[in-house]
Amino acid sequence: MSNPGTLHVVGAGLAGLSAAIAAAKAGTRVVVHEAAGHAGGRCRSFLDEKLGRVIDNGSHLVLGANRTTLAYARATGGIEAMVAAPAAFPFIDLVSAKSWTVTPKRLPAGIREILKALGLPWTGKAETVASRLGNTPSFTRLWLPMCEAIMNTAPDEASARMFAWTMRKALLGGSQALTPWIFPGGLSAALVAPALATLSLFGGEIHFRRRLKSVTSHSLTFDDTKIDLGPADRVVLALPPWVTATLLPGTVCDLPTRPIVNAHFRCAQPVELPHGSHFLGLVNASGHWLFARGDVLSVTVSAAGSLVDLDNDSIAERLWEEIRRALVLPPIAPPPYRIMKEKRATLAHDNRTVATRPGPVSGFEGIFLAGDWIASPWPCTIEAAISSGLAAARLGLDRPGLAF
Ligand SMILES: Cc1cc2nc3c(=O)[nH]c(=O)nc-3n(C[C@H](O)[C@H](O)[C@H](O)COP(=O)(O)OP(=O)(O)OC[C@H]3O[C@@H](n4cnc5c(N)ncnc54)[C@H](O)[C@@H]3O)c2cc1C
Image 1 (cartoon, protein in one colour):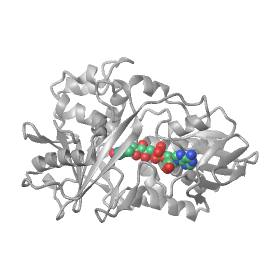
Image 2: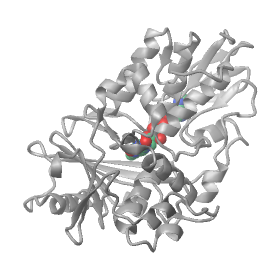
Image 3: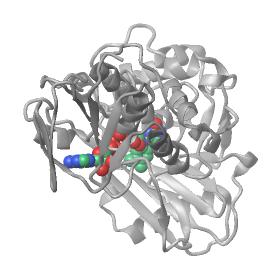
Image 4: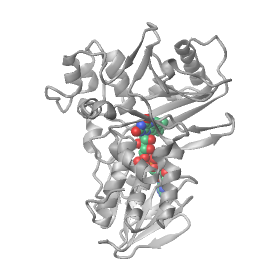
């Protein structure tokens, strides 16, 4: 081992957990500090007392193309709590009532459109998904829902280059790359709890309710304690960009964000989606993706815009009405529900923001940055978060080949 000091990881979201696991498994002493009373950050589950069910802050899906995520899940054993669903994405259009299924072999688009989506011919720096694909026949039924789901950004501002990169990863990687991995027992059971157990197994420590107030290359000051750093100690700050900006002024410029709204409905009985799928894409609707887990139906609204400003009852009524139409349910009032508003769910993936995501080197000796917002070809996703944590651990430990 080239660095015998301690690696302090601040923030126990997936980026922080990724850095901590990689370093601890390599034999480094690791201490994680997290402000909240739990790990997982924007990707977590909790017991909702009102619904009497464990729900996720928001339904998440990863694709087989997210290789670093799957490597992390394999290394912690969390993969056992994930299921590889068939590479088939069912959709329903709530205006026309038409339904269709997208598979790697059945894309509802012609070859010229697909090449355009893949970034060919050459995609300009200023192009948006709408300027590139907005007038194609399959825009509403394919590229629009893909763009909102992957980029959490409306097509008229989403970077066409970033979209094309994700499309190349997903569509050119065979059916394995398009395989959706889902979380039947919740996000924490797959991505958080096994990581904490692995950290503990390899001697790592984690301290909850410990908020970082200031940081230098010589010390970390939390609300209740100060830690002096030795010359061999290293720090990974795996924090949201706005927190990093206040702790290390000048390192991070203002990065705009976009919200995601999730509505979870506890139905009277378990709900089956068409074709036994775990999810259903909604087109021409406020809601974008419907997920079924037992008797809980969850709707995700990406790039949620002004919906986030509505009161919870209005959101629930609007989304429940769409569920009723999609699943042809009788006209009954919304069952008990929980609305989750993540106002800063991800960065806005417009061309300017994508170009200004900073790298992992903070400019402060021994301090490295991680988080889904760190420069990456991936948009802000689980894959970006986990990859950034691994990259920061590699830099901190000076071990370029470090793996989980
Ligand atoms: C509703 C929703 C749906 C999503 N859906 C998907 C999806 O389907 N697929 C996908 O790949 N991605 C999805 N994402 C994105 C994914 O959840 C994030 O990219 C990922 O969780 C970010 O992890 P992170 O570690 O970078 O950041 P965070 O999870 O934000 O972690 C930062 C951590 O730092 C802690 N912290 C903050 N301030 C301090 C401080 N001062 N001191 C100590 N700790 C501090 C926080 O409490 C938090 O635990 C979704 C996100 C949301 C919100």
